[in-house]
Image (cartoon, rainbow, N blue to C red; front, side, top):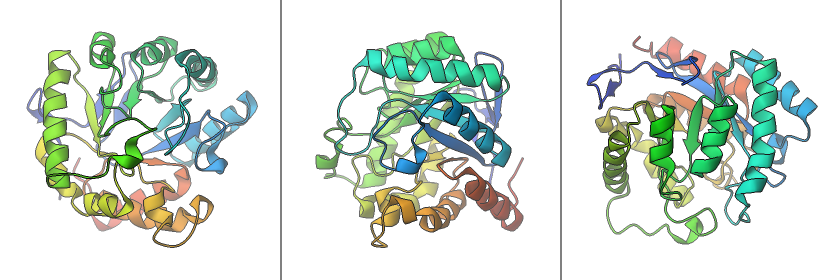
Length: 293
């Protein structure tokens, strides 16, 4: 059975992430993070939330299907997406967090943002986790902010910005070696800022071609050297549907197949549009490969 994840800051097993609001995300078994897009231009149209009523209905369905986390994003990071002013991101995000916190007080909520000010407002409104696609590279205040708030943090690998990342896929060195070095250096900065609970996200599709993302997925076990739980964001992305000659709408079966590969590689959190199917994949994985608790 796989060894327990070792927390590099405390040198003790980490099986959970503790929210500053007292809620706990249990990672003894892999879990599902359900995606709730508050943007009108997400790459997968089926994930776009149209109203508060729609938001609450989708959230309820995801929680009932087994989501352990709900990830709310108000800034589209698809390749080529337009930049969005911070004020508009806040206008979209905060009412959604407040509505979910009102209706589902026990739910573990994640704010998908790379802006420190937005992250702070989200946590003040009730968010339990900051999911930063920029990994602290897009806002110099992010690490200090999450450290001060004592909020769990997802550290993702990205080059450039969502607007430029597609042109930044040339790596002079080995891809995984570059990620390991990047994460090592960022983790030192996070520790200095007082951030305790961290997950790693290799950033599938972010400044990576589909071929590079598949290489990264195949070599996911190499990230275990850093001793932190890994989030896999594969759901309906180009690396899934592109090789099959399909589009995002037809990528559920491919997503499920790659979710199983990610679990075999050690992923502890699957960020997914389709929660029930991801939860079933985890349940079958646990039957075949019992997870150490």
